[in-house]
Amino acid sequence: MQFQKMRKTHTLLAGSVALLLAIMLSAGGAGAESTADDTHTRSGNRQFEHTASPGKDAETVVILHGLGRSSSAMWMLAKRLEVAGYRTERFGYRSLKQTPDQIVANLSAQLARCCAAPERKVHFVGHSLGGLIARAFLARHQVPNLGRVVLLGTPSKGSSLADAFKDKWWFDLLGPTVQQLGTTNGGLASSLPPPDYPVGVIAGVRDGRENEDILPGQDDGLVTVSSTKFPGMTDFVVVPAGHSTMRYSKPVAAQVVNFLKTGKFKKAQ
Image (tube, rainbow, N blue to C red; front, side, top):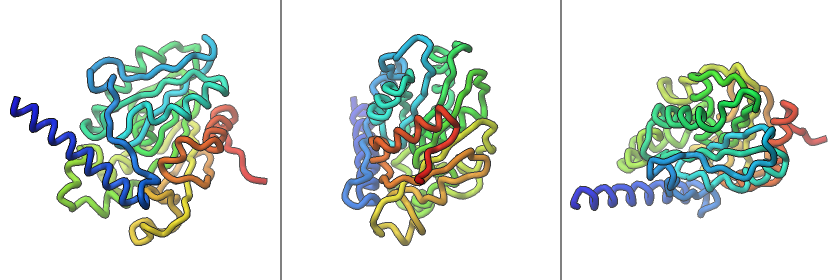
């Protein structure tokens, strides 16, 4: 009983710190994210949240959320992809508890159950950390029916914020994956090879100069535009959206659909 109370206290504390950090770094909550874990993941059951299929032959889009979120955080994007004719699978994982290796292993097991049909093309869309997880998975696993990949606000060169706060006492409370999000060699981002598949990168730009000393240049409140770019990307576009709000943005969803269908983003005329 005492152990359970201590564990619950640690979980609440870690969640509170993560939420507070997001609020501080996003100017009063524009980029704040809930730290609730996906219920499927917590119970140990299936980790994919299925949505209604537009048709049995529809292509599948696997959607991965970011740090401290759950699969429900991506519901709006999933709905818009469905309207565009895709079947969606939202993968939930415990970003504040699991290592990247554990997350990738769970993703592999779940994909084998839901998306192994060779006749159905499978695309990936990852927001923030979810984009790094998608790339880590694809670096280790062959997907014969792989389509295209879109990264939303993903720090593909590592996170400057992780560098800035790594020595703070509360940083360890954010879990093992956060420890690997820095820009130095040995981090998750630096360990990933250039992609051998088509990948489009969407970076957000938000007004404000709150984090100018930590995030030089244009940024979405948490990730700089420059850190989203990496060797081997197929196409790149900047949208007027904050780090968290891009998940709900209709123009962002339209860009995702355009890349999944054509391999290119729609550029302003």
